[in-house]
Length: 457
Picture 1: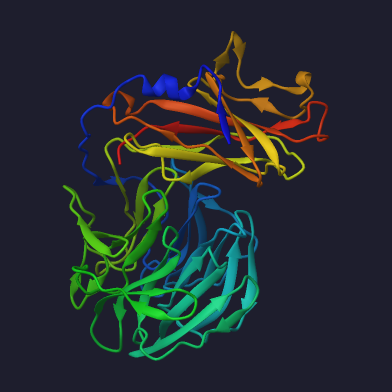
Picture 2: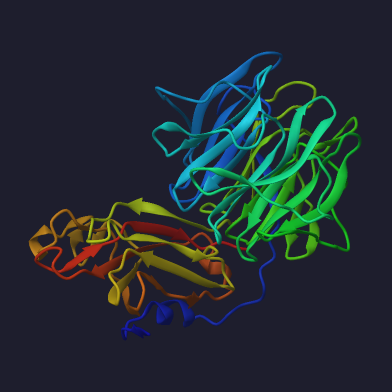
């Protein structure tokens, strides 16, 4: 149940009638700075910490790399680590959202690997030795619904290919018995389609040639997804799931002597090419990730006959965003986390922020504002220690509030955003006050704060 106070944010936004549908065109743009030239880096987007993580790659010839970089939405930074996986390229990587860590498996640096490592934002830890045999070119995706990392295929060298399927439960690997009729042995790419609860495979390279088929894995069997059209055959492409737009994105790759520069999206069972005015140069083995907090797809490096060091981003002219803008304070279930449950604040859609860490059954006040500097003449952030909440700060003006009642540890609020051009680029702020009896004198704590920007889908 949700109760809206009289001065509700819906009144503030919806008093403007919806206007004509907005037309916007996504485009690729080159961005400056970043790691050194490389192909085949391990790259994923950590949507809990709102940053892309890149590890290793090949800088050309036998120059294999073992550095770790992060992109926080404004630029790349090198992370210094005491321990790291051996320098390598062209392995498998995915983000384990349950445990909040990047996982990498296998790869090549003149020798082949079959070790599994995890990066938690501060430290590399080897979490498994063994499981799938040593290989490069394998593909990996985390099935969040079943909490299993799925790995398929790869190569032990030359034209040899694997066609095995493995799952990792966070501590150990298990080879899955797969019925006859699944995908052929190959090197390939995977992504987890969270909206549809399935792992998706596209294309790859068997012992000879390249493929353009699409397959899905449900934890029991592989099924070929029949589509009316598909990207041209390729391997060594970039592939990831765009959590904000709920679709699979594919970029680049190679087929024979052709290096692709096209971008495709899979929504359900429909492939569609994304046509843009600008495109990165054709390449294979790029670093590739979808930044769901900034409404952006990222490419770094790759190879087009030589290792590359350019970065590119694909975004709408008026991109939406929903990113952390300040820390909360800990309650009995830790610091309540505010985040997008579905999508981003696009005009003409319904946006659903949620707060986790609510004692159940419980209450949470959702605060909506437009100013993070002052409220009722008081400077922000406002220290709430004087209100019985030591260590807590209010970080937005309380232009409107919504009371959320929940029977679980998560409270979600959905509100429609009109399809109005005047909203594009307008920023707003959210924070949640979570009722937590006995945690302090006030019996309440606040979540981290978020800054959102209205954009076009």
